[in-house]
Structures are given as C-alpha cells and as structure tokens.
Image (cartoon, rainbow, N blue to C red; front, side):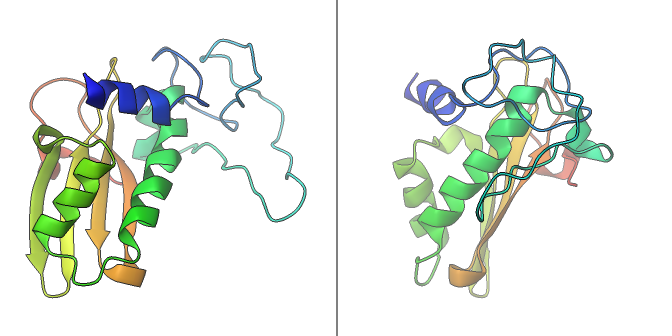
Length: 164
C-alpha cells in the first residue's frame, strides 16, 4: 500500500487517470483542469530562465505511455538519480537500500546485478493500467536512469521492455 501511495505522490503534478496515450505536446501542469487525454496541441513554449519543459515523444516506444506515466517518468528518473549520484561503491545491497528508502519495494526491483563499478537494475512501476518501468545503472557521478515501457499485463520481464 505504501508503494502505491509513493507512486501517486511522485505523479501528483501529472495528469490524473490512465486514460489517453501521449502522442504530442508537453505534459499538463498541476493547474490544468483538462482531462489527461486532451493534451495541448499548440507548440510548447520555453519557460523563462534555465528551466525547460520536456516535449512529449512523437515516435518510438515512449508514445505507448499514457499521459500520467509519461509525466511521472521524468519525475522518477530525477529522484532516483539524485539519490544514487553520491553513492560510493554502488553495490546491489546499497542500491537496493536506497531504492527501498525512496519507497520502491523489493517485489518491483528486478535484475539487480553488479558489473565492475556499476550496478544495473530495473523497476516495474506499472500501476492503474500504465506501462512505466525504469532501467537504471548506478555508477556514482555516471548514474543513469531511463524510463522504459513494459507490457501492460503479465509478469515483468526486463528483457521484454521497450527502451527509447
């Protein structure tokens, strides 16, 4: 239950519901009252300063994500990367502990394996009909976490996910 609450908390600024697949336009902000499947069709505007708003994909596996998952993808990526960046000697046990501390449960952490100074892992974040997963590589300052697309139903199999 705590895991599902964490997923909802991370995705709070994202469009609600799993309806609608992202085909174009940026995710809606928290002030938007439009339904999740009615994304803006006008070209995105660059926010002031250094902030940039991500642009929804128009090709590749990520177009399979619904609006909520597409938006939550970057939020999960950022929070996991920030937590793992300063990890010295990222062993599978240390990576698992950090992921657990962030609210990701063992049943959703897959293929946690070390290769040299890098620990690889996958997270199954499918919820409410979504297809979101994470493909991560913990390696200190070289840490990378990317969203991926898993089949909507069935067991999670890291070798059966799509990666942009």
